[in-house]
Structure formats: structure tokens, C-alpha cells
Length: 333
Image (cartoon, rainbow, N blue to C red):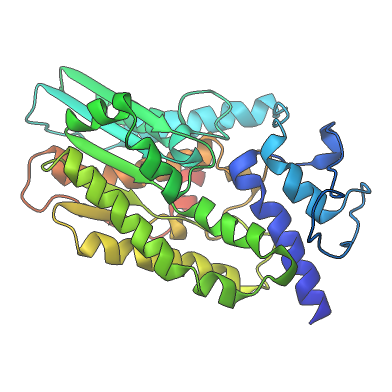
């Protein structure tokens, strides 16, 4: 039991990276956190190898600026080759419209955190795929991704005049949200982290997600909405803790249930894409995808959007299934 608790503490350290990018604490210089002013400070936690406590790391996470990535140039070239192949090999689209406007909104996956090319992660790759494989005259994708966004914060941002205007005038909406809601539960229950804590939050998360979709529909009654699921980036390091997979599955189930209650809305699963993925699919923080990881997501999203973009009645359903995306990309290296 003690070992499991310590392991979960390590998991929380990884989870805290999500909203902040505060990884590899020994590589970042930041002032210690003063806990003396807290009236209900928790007992002194175990120390890390760097001397900082896990509680201090989590509390500092939101203020840490991520260090610049130093990636092997040869790996960058390999990733660029893979991404180019994904774009070139995408199926041709026969888009009926002369112009297409899309909005991508949500958290760091939409912003493209971890993509060291600054191309916007999966959104940038998706844009290249559509432009390269269709005769569309004009394509515009507005990216409103923001690192660390939770459902409650996204609801607030849906009142922003610029975002409101873009959603009101868009043809299609892409959403990534939910992973930071998981992190909030972990940080709030740091000294008593159990699966039940996450289970107890599911109803609240469902209600907030419902409100997000209600607001989107208030702004745009016609545009199809695609909710992209969450994935478990900790499988490589904490595969012995099945609760992590279950938590992600619970969040994805809520997403699917929300979608099923909406008209013209679709769920895009990505959890399977990263099962068995090694470090070459992730940025240096070991949490966010790198450009290669985002290529997996873009390819999956493209597959789901294909029927919608071509004006077919059964929009939002994948045209085909890929059983092992890692093998498919490995063949392109």
C-alpha cells in the first residue's frame, strides 16, 4: 500500500505538468514556496531527489516557464518526414464548399503545446492535410486553444467577444477539454489521492461539459461539433496502475454520453492512439505529444471529418479503422 501511495505521488507530479509545462524541476530555477502562511498546511511530504517537496513542486507548477526543448536534429528530420508522409497520403476530399471556416477551441492539445515547430499541433497538420488533398478555394481555422483550460474556464472564455464571433461564423467546431479537470482533482486531493476522488467528480464534470455544449449551440445551431477525447500519457511509466487507464476511460465515457445527447455532434477517440507509444511520440515533458504524436491525432480527426466535409449525410463517422497507427507511421520512417 505504501509503495502504491508513493507511486501515485509520482503520477501526480507528472499530472501537474499538464496545465503548466513545469517539468524537470532541477532544470528550472524558481523561488521556494512559502507555506508558512497557510492555516491548514499538510504534513511535510517526502522529498524529491532535488530537495524540493512534491507539494512545493505542485504549488509552483502554475508559475514555472517550460524550458526550451533540445531535440536531436536527426529525430526532428525523421518526425518531419513522417508528418509530410501523413499529409501526402491522406485521402482526397471532395469538398462541396468554395470556402471553409473552422474553429478549434480547448486546452493545450488544441494550442499545440509540445510541437516545437510552432505549427499549432494537430490543428496545423490537419490544415495542411485538408489544403493538400482538396480543391477548396479558401480554408481558415481559428485556433483558440489555451494551455491549462478546464471546462469551467472554457465556459468563461465562451463569453469572449472574439471567440463568440468566430464560433457564430464557423462551419465546424473542434474541441479538446477534460484532461485539466482530471489534474484539478489530483491537486485538490494531493494528500489523499484515491480513485474514489476522481469518481466523485464525474457528475460535476458531466454537468460542466453539458454547459459547454449548450453554450456552443447557443452561439451556432448548425455547425457540427467534434469532441476529441483524452488519452493516458502515463502508460509508459506507470503501466502497473490500472486506475489511471480507468480514470481516462471514465472521462471519455462522459464525453461520449454528452455527444449522444446532442444533435450533429461527434466524439473522436484518441486514447488507443497512444497505447504502446514510446517517447518518440512525446515532447520533453513526457506528457504532451510532439509533432509526431500530433500527426496521429490529426490523421484520426481527418478520418472522422472526411464524410462531413464531403457533404455526406452520415457525417462524423470514420471512413475506415486503423488497427495499429504506430506500425503505419513506423513504415513511413
